[in-house]
Length: 453
Image (tube, rainbow, N blue to C red; front, top):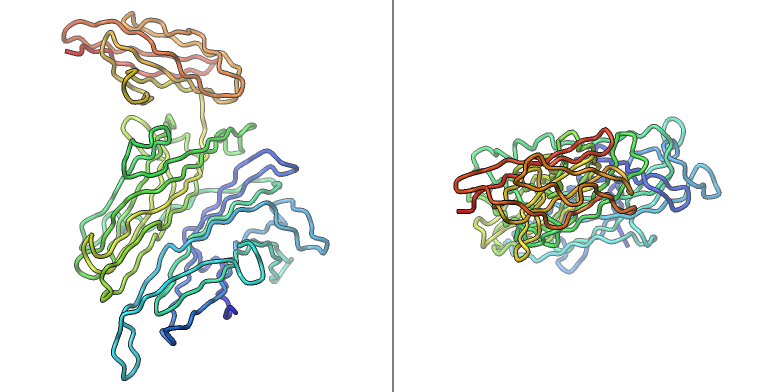
């Protein structure tokens, strides 16, 4: 039987983020609302009987008035609505172990320990919708309910959550990313060498960065566009090998892990909104004489430069403390998810092409040896069919084939067949502008043709 619960509201929530994404159906559903954040639990379990297990019930209240903002079916007795379609992710993102707890007259001893999170005794799922009574009209809010189980002496510090809810919206839409206010303290921690790791997530090339595992991406068209102008939603997921270890002074060691998602935005202004989460997928401690702490303190999703491109990026502020050294204590891997709303206009990207080499690396600029082949990619704002004219401004690159691109009716992207180029002579370099036209919209890319000697 669970003991009295921890009830957490906005005063106990850090890094709260809300993302509203227009969707279509089924039924009357037209909006997906994604909530992410970190619940500040700070529960320390007393040692007590080593054979006993402590179970506490946890409730996290997401204080959004669903009755006022969204239309939901009623559950027979107003004003309590039924829960719309929902998916919940809940995971530990900070924990500590006290390995030498002592009682009066008894020596300290090493303890093993384990944690569990599972739905409460009286419900099969984590998330419910409840009516919150206040000083005025009752409000309906989301509540995440879970049992937290712990044996031996240790503590839960933070729990990361993400809840996705499908609803029917009542305008206006209000959303926006929350930025980690203290991120500079992690990027330049006092009295410690900085740990700022940047990794590349490429869903089209899982081997692009060996430290990123299982990179995946789902992209959806928002048509008609969202009120903020977004016409694409992209969800990125994966695992990152970070091998983050504590310093030698037995203090909390801070750092950042940035995941750059290889999706060219064309410009930072095309990044409109984002919400993400990150938590542990592998931690270790091989020194039972040391207390340990692990944490992902906050997560933000922004636009960032990656070579010649502007791409979405998730940044996690990470913390570790324990026995020093990469073989003693550390955070090995994190699991992450980023949800990004962007604006896609007309876009053309280019790449060198080698039939025996890696897949094309499309970018606003590319280099090709004269006489070798290249390819281009055209992206349009909405579903085809639409005709895009593609041309070249220099004879060393023949007019692209086809010169008029008809994007398939169920796609927004056209990738060309390999295109030819001509030799430019010893020591010569030619810069060629490749241009795409769709109505009044215009986009260009630069292809540099050079001698391969």
